[in-house]
Image (cartoon, rainbow, N blue to C red; front, side):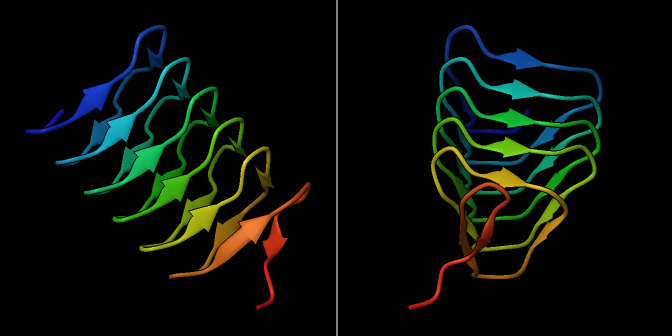
Length: 105
């Protein structure tokens, strides 16, 4: 853990997890083994991040989202509440749904 990291109560942080500076991990979040979370990210309550997933910098993961093992969420991306990310979310992309799909604006 680095400076400025906040981890909410009842969260589970597994082995070999790396969380960079100024990141918030809310209540009841599960981070699987070997997860990497970049700087200035926010992981909402009750989110699940599977083993080996890579979360970039300035990422927002809203509550109850599920990030499957090995998925990659690139810098500046947003994952909507309750969404299920199967594999990848591109840089600055917003995804929502089951499975998560890009939101068209």
